[in-house]
Length: 124
Image (cartoon, rainbow, N blue to C red; front, side, top):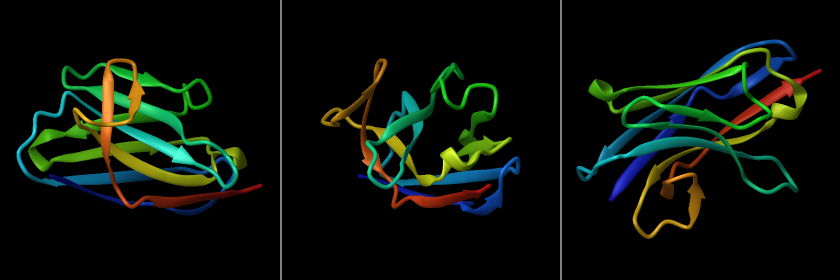
């Protein structure tokens, strides 16, 4: 069992920045990858960014060049630096960890553990 707790969301104006954090705890697990997803009201959940254990990163097209995913394994913490935020970035952001039984795929990563989410609101 893995627990994920996100923090760092909030309200900012367009062009602003936020940094999200996700602390992972619980049973020791080999995390081959970690990811951030988001879901806006009335829309499907979409992948934002994923980072593999070797540090390889992949981003959704809508956030490339603006968001940066990183991790500090010594702190079991995943980060998402979000710059040049736009109103269309408004959503609940979720941290995700892999699970063999997970139902969400991104590339070779199969996600099954989810945090409770942190709200990001960007005003024009």
